Length: 259
Image 1 (cartoon, helix red, strand yellow):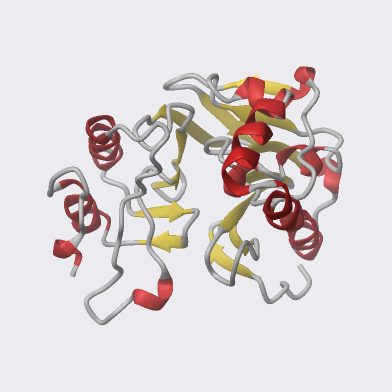
Image 2: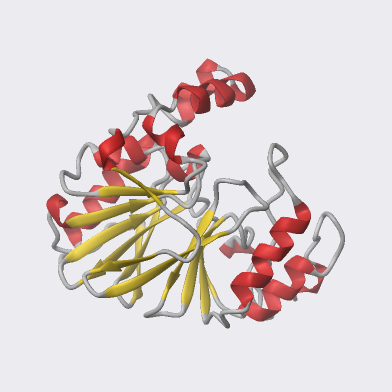
């Protein structure tokens, strides 16, 4: 393995967090998982992150044809906007997408139209670029309880609605950690203190369903995870404490108990 780029961090056990550079530093992470010569990307960031993902792959000594899976946790553009472009560079990879989101990865026109209505064309171009679809034959839909093997490393998929209905989380048996997308919340490293990390639930209004999100968080916690791999931002521990904070208050789930 050559020297990692400055925006990539080796978390151990074959997992690398990659700062996608979306909006600012250490705001939006994608993950590269490596196992016995095979690789998977979990979340991708936007199109502008794709060079960073490919450079990290090269730095760990793998070729593009060794990537087996690209797995967006859900299809919001800060997580999945770069899936199509990344897939075009990975000849053997399959995209593994929640069944409610798969059609948007194949034909992103409705996704783009909705985001453009909110942000406008200029901001869409600046933040996300031209969204590229994935050929239908290269998309696999997940289902609740499904397991995939990354060269012998078991990944389990859980349907986790609440933040969005097209959201799944991925359980890594090796590290006993979930890749949580936006289900478990946001936790930015600049807010860490001697008391540990601080966490804020994600309440995107379009499909936000507080009770379903609370149920999803509790389901994740039932696995007794050792860590969570957040898209915003990177790995956190103290999982049970953060989980209690994120689901103990009312609709806003303001995490006053996290410290």
